[in-house]
Image (cartoon, rainbow over all chains, first blue to last red; front, side):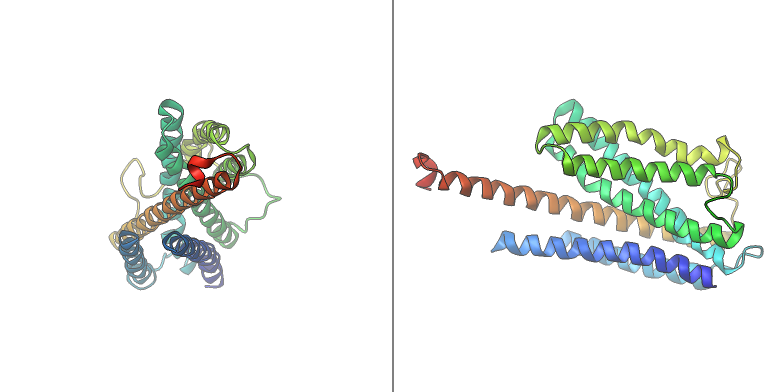
Length: 35
Length: 238
C-alpha cells in the first residue's frame, strides 16, 4: 500500500501542479486580453 | 473559454469515475497486491504522451511543409503536455518497479525504462530549442525538425518490451492474443484511459489558447513600440 500511495502521490502532484499552473496562466492572460 | 470549462469538467468527472473503478470496482491483483493499481494511471499516461507527441509530429510536419502557424502552435501546445505525461508515467513506473522488481538504477538496464528516459530527454530538448533559439521562424523550424525526428523514439518505447526482453512486462491491453486482463480490470482501464485522454486534450487546448493570447499580446506590444518610435505618423495617428 505504501508504494501505491507513493506512486499516486507522485503522479497527482505532477498532474495537479501542471493543471493548476496552466489554468492560472490562462485566466491571467484572458483577464489581460479583456482589460 | 466555455468549451474549455466543459472539457475540464468532463475530465474531472471522468477521473473521479476512473478512481472509483480503479480503487473499488477492480479486483486486487492476486500476485502483485495493491501496488498493481498504479497500472490505471501509469499506462493511460503513457498512451496520452504518445498521443501528444503524435500531435507534435503532425504539427511539425505541417509546419515544415506548409509553413502553417496553426500547426506550429499545435506542436508548441502539445509538447509540454506530452512531456508532463511522460514524467507521470516515469515517476509512477519507477515506484511500481521499486515495489515489484526491487529496481535500483545500478542494476542491469531495462529497455522500456531507458527508451522512455530517452523520450523525455528528446522532448525536453524540443522545449529548450523553442526557448533558446532566436525567436520567429528559425525557432519554429528547428523545433519542427526535432519534433519530427524525435518521434522515432515513440514506437521504440512502445515495442521495446518485445524487441528486447528485459525486466518490464510485455504489453497487456493490446497483446497479440487480445487483452490479458479480467473484464473488471479492463473496464476500469478503459474508463481511466478515456478520462486521461480527455484531460490531455483539454490541456493541449488550454495551452493552445495560451499561445494564441501570448501572440496577441506580443503583437500589441510590438505595435505600441512602433507607435513610440519617432517618424511613424501613420501608426501614431491610430
